[in-house]
Image (cartoon, rainbow, N blue to C red; front, side, top):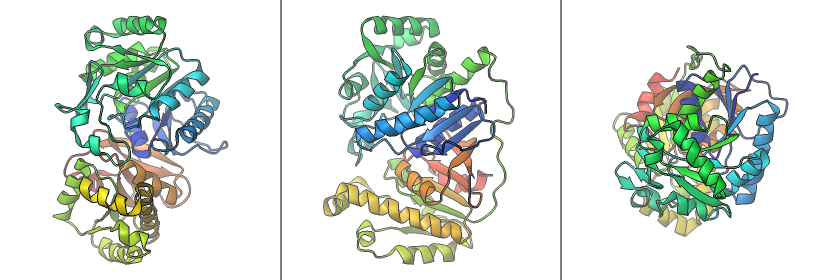
Length: 422
C-alpha cells in the first residue's frame, strides 16, 4: 500500500466526512475504526483515516490514542499527517484540539501547525479568527448549548489559546485571498514570532485550495475536512498521485434499511421530523433504558417493521429535554445509556438481516460500528456535503453505511441516503 496521506480524526463521522472530501478530490480513501491491528492488511489506498473517539475523552487518553494512531500511519509510510476535528471546533477549555495537536507536532517535529475548521459549502467560515455558522457567530448558534462541548466563544485564537501553552497566531483574510505564496510568508512570520499554531481565515472553497497548497510541505496540518480539499493536488504536482476515475467505486449492498439517530443537533431533529412523515419511527427514553426497560421492545418493533421498508429509532431531543435527562441521570450516564442501546439495537437488527444503515451523530456512529465489529470502511461518493456513502471492511456481513455528523445533511437526508447508497 503506497500511503500518501495519513489522517487522525477525533470522532467517527468526522473521519467519514474527511474521507469523503478526499475521494471527491481523487484519492482512494479508507477509514479505520480505532487504532488498527499492526498486521491489518488493506487494499491499495492513497489516504487512510483512523477514526478515534477522542473528542470528549480525557485529554491524556486522547493524546495517547492519537500518538498510537500516528505511529501506525507512519509505519505504513504516510508522507503527511492530517489532524481532523469538527468544523465547529468542538472542544472544551481543557482540550482536546490543543493537547492532541501539540503532541502530534512534537512527535513530527512540526514548527507551526495550521488550524482551519472552515467548510464554506456547509456554512462554516472563519473571518478575522472568528468562526461563523451561516451568518451567525458560532456562539450565537445551537452549539452554545451543546451538552458535551458548548462553544460560547467564536474567537478561535482565544479558544485554542486556552488549550495550549504555545502561542497562537492568525493568518487573516486579506493575506489568504492573495494566495498560497502570501499564506506561506505569513506562516513563516508567525513561526519567527514564536507561534506554534496559526488560525487561518477562509470564506470560499478557493481559499481552502490556496491554504492546502501553502502547506504542501508541512508534516502536520489540522482542521475540518474542508481544508483537506487542497491536499490531493499537492501529491499530483509531485507526481505521486495519478488522476483517478474510480476513487469512489463501491460494491452493491442490497437489504433492509435502518436509521439510528443519537445526535441532538438542529439538523438531525429536522431530519427526524421529515422521516416520521414517511416511515415508522420510535423514540428511545433514556430514563427507561437506565432502568433496564424498553430496549427489547424497541428491537422487536424494528424487526417487525423493517421487513416492509426502512425504520427509524432515535434518542434525539431538543436541548431542554436533554438537560432534564442529564440532571436526572448525570451527563455521562445519560449519554452512555443511549450509546449502549444503539449498539445493541444495531447488532440485533443486522443479525435480523438489516444491511443498509444510516447513523446520525459521531458518538452514536462510534458505538454502532464498534458493536458491529467493523474494522474499516471503503469510502464512496458524497450523499450530502460531508457525508459519503461507505461499505464495511472486515469480518461479518458486508454493510452499506452512511455515518452522519449531527449538524450535516439536508432535511430529507435519511430516506435519500438509503436510496442512493450502493
